[in-house]
Length: 370
Image 1 (cartoon, rainbow, N blue to C red):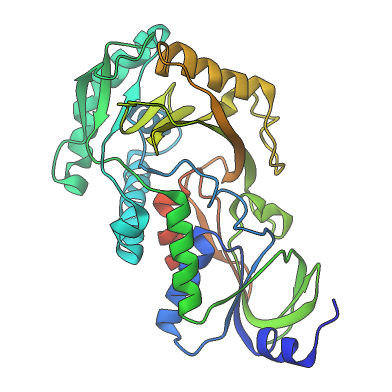
Image 2: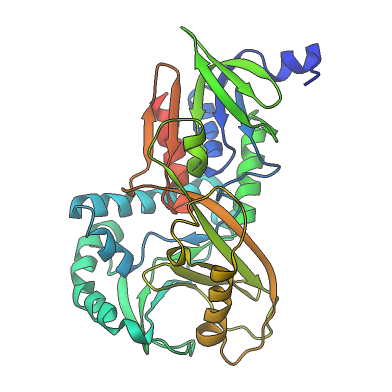
């Protein structure tokens, strides 16, 4: 890249903190670092034109886990670990709302509903039998019962006539969130360069040399916040996991309001701007969706459309307006990886599909490590 003296001096010299990734984690990390070190020179490098990965691609659920997901997690995590996971999600959402404000997020606490397919009667009964136990566990966090039963008020078809309702679940406008985070970081003097892909880095005694597809420079500290793409730069147990989504065109008199989980959380949908947004289906092809490619596949897109036709909008004509995918970072444990990797290199990755809930907190924890 043909850089001028001015470009090198203003953008690439005396960098205190270089953050890779301008998503929820990277931007929150930068904001926290500015709180702690107001005069620090912070540079964020982003490989996309917009924040890549999942930060601008997610469904905008302000959630912390449906009842069946929590029970599923108990099969592979201890009770203490699961309560800690939920606590982090709750505190992360509080921090996000505190950082930006509910108006900027278009935050609405319309509640979350878990639906059960007719074929999942055994799962439904299992969840009902453990509902009060989980409510008792969560009461110290929420000061009230989280899960209750509701009748099929939205007239969905081919599902159990009762939903499990979560009164504390909310939804946000993902675009508003990311616009606001970007504006806030830049207003504090954080510099963000887009379309810059970090290829590798090496450590000196007191700095890190960073090589990108455009230029090389040094920073005192390097912080990796690339979630699903982390394994391209660092040796950590993070697998990419693609999530496919579609959204309908506006639907007249749409009375579906809230966030909805189906089939143990493998599918999820919500209302937004008189449309239905639906995503999921990774369980149809785990291996195929373990990718960093932003594509869609017929098997999953067809399934999402089928759910719209047979369950969500069986008597309402609709058209698909747009399809996309995002890349999450997952592993064999749901706990995020926030750690110091060497003298000057740190990471906050593997958010397990809960970036909206825990991204702000992971960003803060990453900054606190420094």
